Amino acid sequence: MAFALLTGGSECPILREKSVFPMPLYRSCNVCGHCSPSLLYRKEGFAVVRCPACSLVFVGDPLEDIDFSGLYDASYYRSADARLYADYFGEETGRRAAARRNLRLLRLFARRGRILDVGCAAGFFLAEAKQYFEPFGVEFSPVSSAFARERFGLDVRTGTLAESGFSDGFFNVVTLWDVIEHVPDPAALLGEVFRVLRPGGLAVLTTGDIESPFARRAGSEWPLMTPPWHLYFFNRKTILGISEATGFRPVFLFTRGAVSGNALFRNPVARFLGNVFQRGDVLQIFLRK
Image (cartoon, rainbow, N blue to C red; front, side, top):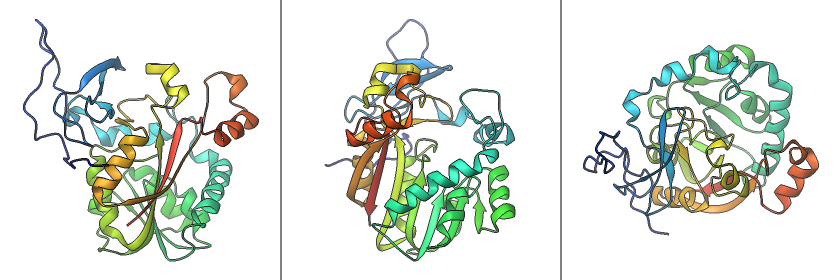
């Protein structure tokens, strides 16, 4: 699968929709660099666009207008907004159980060494991983990174991976659980992940699948369609394309998650059957350097 790896969207000339009224600028595609995305719809005041060349869906507005530090302050983790967390830190038991499930699968591919969790939030995954790996974390939010250090004594660095100071080839495993859709430049992030992994190292990531049956039916009402927190909406083709363009070799991909917004289909049995038949709305991909 051949994709040009163009990052940031600055290579393209200014694009406006044909209209008598001025329209907002649409950024170029982060996966293939195409300059002419088309508007799908508007959600929460943001233009959600699709690349006609590779099908990546993303927020087309200039990201310089978004206050990212304000997006991930204390209110992100304790909020009455249904799009956010009611009490993220109070969900430790359930989130650590989910971490153990992720670890069981991860350890089929890697069993020891240094592990880095990018976007580690409160450190619940690393708290479970440390019985097998030497754990490190990077977290953009000062609130949750402080929690991870104080609650679990973890080496969690506040900021981005590019700012963290890790040397080339330092890690055996890097995980990105529901992170890549949040960042302004996924291609640049995967480039940093590739850099800090040793040769043969493993990267594992999850992200929503906008081509899942649930997402296609729900459209703009898909629960994972939450700009400005989610900026990119991948499918199998685009997540594999951006991964391979970075230099990774995919070794395993599957889907899990919800199959419907209907409460009848959100029970454990329905989720299990959705996983068996690959109908869930979350992609999980294992990559080798």
